[in-house]
Length: 347
Image (cartoon, rainbow, N blue to C red):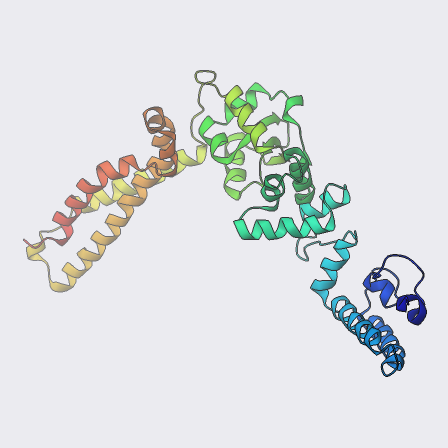
């Protein structure tokens, strides 16, 4: 006997029916109170057969009804179940209003609801982004995943094979910067700089662009591989002259240089340590600590903003761009020795 048809009035079709059909609900019903109401009504009806010859079938059907109700009244379980039935769920982030790239891929028919869950589990387990996970699982191409990621970020997607960057834009941004941020400058207009990026741009990159071009950047997304290929193409060795550091660096160097001159003048005017009172000695030690800190701040800024572009990058490996403090290492020791002699050593 077909208990679904005879007892619940469900027309012939897939057996067992999906949870919505089982509870006599419209598909993807979202009102939990209505779901519970239908469950209670059907539960009471099926219990009429619990003591007769169909007691086993009755109990099995009661269990199915309970499972359906519990699934559809639990938000997370319902979301996963609805996806398995092909429902496209709007998962916009409450703060940003963005949908994840998996939602866009599902809308395009690239992913099924079940595959969305698999991608998320794989990404969480391995520690990947959703874009990398969906590509690694070979469920979407890099282009499809990047286009969906651009939609998630509210950015445009661009195929760099169709673009020829302006030479002026390429000349203004040095090779070490485009490699560090995996980006490629494309065009410069009166208001913005169009830059192709592999990911959402960081604040540091936006500031770098603003300082070098004197205007903000407009971001478009491209595949990481296409950006790297174009960097190799347009920044080949000897192809273009490296620009100098942004104006901000020069200003910082000038300020720190002026501070160094003032400190040196103060050192020259100091009295011998032996002639100082305990309070004056404590004050001098504190001044020595400040001077030591300022020395490393000055040297670090010179290394980062001036000497890296002017000197270090020409003969040091590219990996040193993440720790460009060569001058600090060379001059820091002697500077500390002098400060120790002047401010800390008892004479």
